[in-house]
Image 1 (cartoon, each protein chain N blue to C red):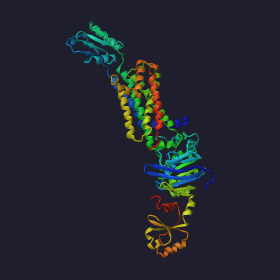
Image 2 (image 1 turned 30 degrees about the vertical axis):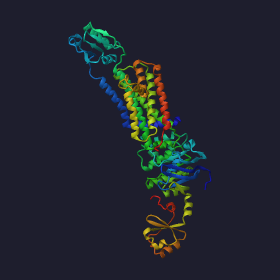
Image 3 (image 1 turned 90 degrees about the horizontal axis):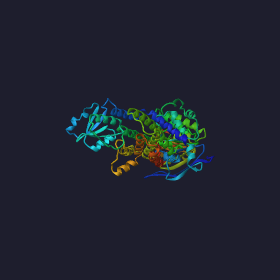
Image 4 (image 1 turned 180 degrees about the vertical axis):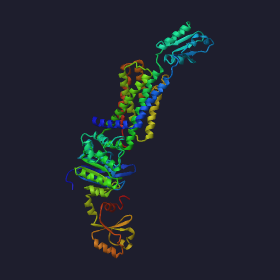
Length: 297
Length: 335
């Protein structure tokens, strides 16, 4: 897939805290103009990895290279960052908050242009503390875009937003993608990653446990379809069948190439099928398959 | 670099000006000082002259001078204390009627001159005793101390606390993700606070000065320079405390640890002359001591730049040392 040289390269990254190894030998490269997703449950090491990439945290070992060079002044001028949580300076309006950050960069977009890009024109004179969750996130995105960055880091940008605000935010990110920006995104919403990312790395316990294009990963790990049954209806007899079964908390999932044969086998095993669901596999299933855990458990 | 510094400086000024309670407090505190000074040194007309009386001999009551109007007589017991009061014009004349009238008067004091004439008219036999020491009003002596103390509190708490708040809220972490350097950020904070302190100090100087009829003996421009450099030094000192810590209790404790010795040892309220040598040594290290010492020299003795150059150099050097230390030990985020 990589047609161009990587804009960012992470090599053997390790971050240790007393008693914990948060990131344990993570390596990957991000080609310019693509959206790269780091997926995983809370505590997997996503935020630690992305903050080391941003130059906010020093790594215990390993390195991050931006355009082949260690992260430095050029990177700071060319990177846009949206943290998981950011407080802004009190008593500033939306426009003044953006203008403050615009003043910190040599080059970038016009403040008005950024406000328009993030649909903030009507809120320009509002105090930045009087915004809804979705508006606040759009303001933080505007600040991340104010230097017209080459690479944009979004750390769980839609966590805590309502579905409508989340969808609006995704549309915004897609419009930024269309400008050929490189995006590094962490999320624990599989839907978000599937929609936005060209490539993903799934993390658990500080390791990358799978990497690739979302659709390719799904094809590699899953047969065409998943059959979902309530756990209590999956009989002992059925458990002895030669099926690929993934156990979730309240249900079992059977992954199969041969839908007809599997259905026949289930009927013979007297499994009630009235609650059966058949659907294509998604990244949630992939995570469950890889770790035996549900992502948001 | 200047562009980034100005962006942060401007945003900080806006934040300060819009934070009404803090703004009001910052302006009300000095106003309270002004009103307090007015209460202590203003008020209804008082006796024109104040005369200290030593001794309580029977002869005293008969002396015609004791029946003069508009003269307040204050009994005193210790001669050396009383003489200090004369030299500092807290009393206009000191009289000892035991064994023939003897008196001490400060020859630089206009009121002393007049009250002396009254005394000689009433009791031509009174004998004048020499008084050494320079004549100054206590209120004049106090004035530079009050200004300096106000500056110190504003410098230390105004900057230290704000940076701590930024760090705790994560705003500093966000700034860290930009090209802004620690030195630029700290300099912007210093300059923002400096403009406020200079403004308030000039205001206080004008208001209190008018109220107590104070006229500086020395150059106002030199005083202004001293206020700027002195403020810089104390703001930078506040930054060294705020540079790395994230605990409010610790920062407030450390700020108190700095402000109290300065309150007591820097000569705001009383001179520490005569204290043990180590106390004076500690006092000399404190920037506020240097500020007040230089301010008194200029305002009371009319000293020129030569006399206060050592103070200015000390304050400049400490500013640079504190700023460099602050930038070196600065932490953008809570570890």
